[in-house]
Image (cartoon, rainbow, N blue to C red; front, top):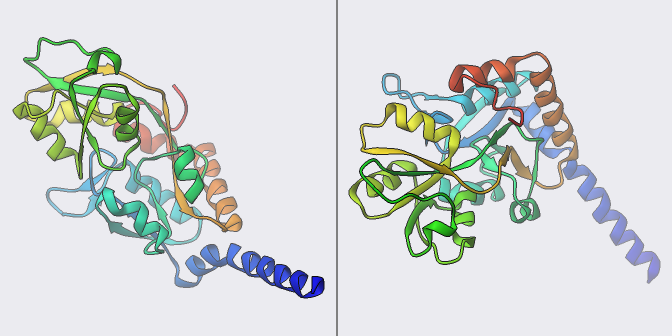
Length: 258
């Protein structure tokens, strides 16, 4: 009986070991890295108004990493609220769309080393006389955040804050401008871009919460893929290509803690 149990255990271990190489081997076999991203999250990933092609910092990072892995990037635009479920279902290999590392997500997925560091920041209406400097000052107020984002989680964890979730940023900001919510919570790097490009009567608010580490999630049980992906990121940092992509979109190096 013990021998039979041992045989079953060894079979399971061998299956896991075989699966460990599957993602890297499968990507190499097809020649592509299937990359999911929201596609409505400028300047990280969004569609160019003229060409309708995906562009942005995450797109550049994906191209850099795919090239270092000897692959071509195959982009899949997916609504944020469904993006992690799609990864779990194997619809794509990775998500490169500013996914913040969190203990909850780490239980379901493995992550690369971080490639972006940023802070949560509030967005408020220009004519709003109220001053929000922390989550505590938002008690009893309505705060909009992206559905399934780390910002939504942080806002929901704040006592007394009324959180309204949105599938994408444009809807959040439209409701903010119209007064349906009191503030929006998003990425500080995105906020700077939004204020520069949005015609809405909004302005930057205070930075709240902790610095977030953004990394690349993929299905668990793929240590060879993780090693290859982490090396590609380390090489991109060493040769300056990751920094160059960051400077292009933000004017600063967001690939390192600031």
